[in-house]
Structure formats: structure tokens, C-alpha cells
Image (cartoon, rainbow, N blue to C red; front, top):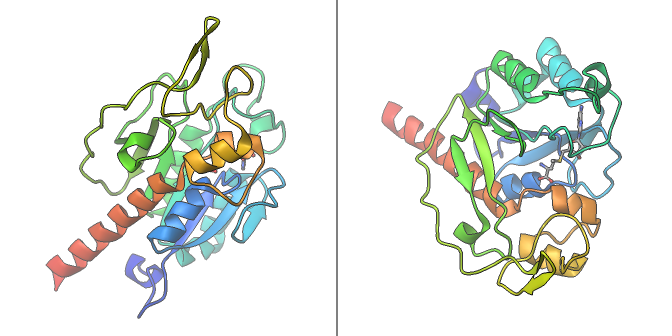
Length: 243
Ligand SMILES: C[S@@+](CC[C@H](N)C(=O)[O-])C[C@H]1O[C@@H](n2cnc3c(N)ncnc32)[C@H](O)[C@@H]1O
């Protein structure tokens, strides 16, 4: 099956594979952009709004490639967690010594995605020494109540980088014992002027989970709606040029 076939004939929505999907912050944005979404996460994620496979993302992706089932997808998103961002110790995480020395889920994820032959997006975990920043997004670009800079690697496709917008003020909270007010809330941690769960939901544009951990792990859907639409536009441009 060609990439064009995976995109679907007629008006079928193209399918996106959402790896390390958590509660689906990223997945929701891709759905808004026009994709059918399927997830995969090692943890039990009952709030994930789409069908999902519970298991190790790399094992699952390798199996999809080996069996040819990867061909049902047009596009892949992966959010491998950073070493300190997740306490899970099973699957790939255990085999790579999670919690021990260095865990790099990005390199094996990228290698498999290259084998899959599909266009992809890898959210680059914070704190990584060598981050690929093909695209950096910020909540202010979308009028959100979080700043939440996120870096993305784009594989087998590209877009022009959107300009960063100046922030409107500070992130609300205590720093060194002093309280600062501001138009943004902190989408990490707890205490110290951190937002309530409803405030976080509102600021991130996420309504379907009230689990703080899932909210603080999530990509705001506005980011992936932007990425998904940009990707679909590149396909339309290519089809137009070929016609
Ligand atoms: C940063 S969160 C992803 C956030 C998600 N993209 C969103 O926007 O909501 C990382 C997720 O990876 C999952 N995870 C960690 N190791 C995994 C593995 N080896 N295979 C599959 N999922 C894994 C964690 O359970 C966690 O839900």
C-alpha cells in the first residue's frame, strides 16, 4: 500500500499512530486536524479518548512494521518520556535500565520510525542534551494560559518555523518565597501557587481528564492541531503539484 492509499480514498480520514500517548493531549489535536487516532501507552490510561494498545511502544511499533499493519497509518507521533519524567520500570524502560544510568528512548524510536517509512513527529523530551528542534511551539502562539515551550523533531517532512511571540507576563507562582502574579499558570508540579486542576484544564485546553499527572504530561491539543494541519497541507500541496 502506498502512502497515498494509507491517507485513505475519498473522504476517509487518515490514521495517526500516537505512541507514548498518555491521556491524549497530542492525540486530541491530531483529531481536530482531521486524523483518526490510535494510541499506545505502557500505563493504564482509561481517560485516553481513542482506541489504544496498552504495552511497550517500541515493541508495538516493531510488531506493526513486521506484520505490515503499519500501512494502515499515514502519520506517526511519538512522545517518549524523559528519564526523570516517568517512574515506569517495565518494557523497554526496564530493558534499558530505567531509573539507573542513561535511558534514551528517542534514538530507538527514531530508528523504528525510519524503518516504518512514514512521516513522523517526535516530541523531544526536556532535559535531553542533544535536542532536535525542527519546530518549537509555545502556548502564547495559541493564546493559551500556559507557556509550555515544546520542541519537536520532524522526520520525512518539514514546515517553516512559526515565529515566537513575546510572552504577556509572568507564570503565576512563588519563586524564592515571593509570589508573582501573571497571565500563565505552571503546568508542572504542585504547591507554591500552582494551578488547581480546573485552572490547568482551562489553561491547556484539555477537558477530558482531571488527573493532574496526565495534565502536566500533556502537549496542549492546540500544538498538535497546528502540526497535523500543517502536515495535511504539505500533502495537499504535493498532490496539487503532481496534478
Ligand atoms: C510525556 S507522556 C506523553 C504525553 C502525551 N503525548 C500527551 O500529549 O498527553 C509519556 C507517556 O509515555 C508512557 N510510557 C513510558 N514508557 C513507555 C513505553 N516504553 N512504552 C509506551 N509508553 C510508555 C508513560 O506512561 C506516559 O504516559
